Image (cartoon, rainbow, N blue to C red; front, side, top):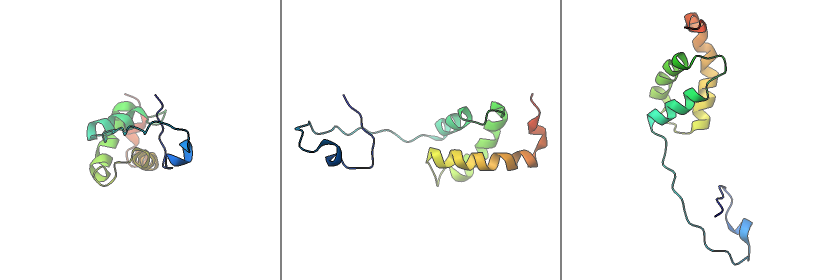
Length: 95
């Protein structure tokens, strides 16, 4: 079995090879808990998981409905995390 993930059409890959038509696969969207878990798992190296999780929760509440793209949410969190630390210096200390 071959699994291809691409924005290009299959005809660009297969041509006249006599291949079997592909079977469509459906991958369900992340729910809020899964998004939260993935974002916390991919937190910055110096961030505490509990504190980063507390930061991600309001970010998802604000932006999670309008954007379900994990890459965009990860980029948004990476941009907001340093600003969050400036506003809450107590978060720099480890528990």
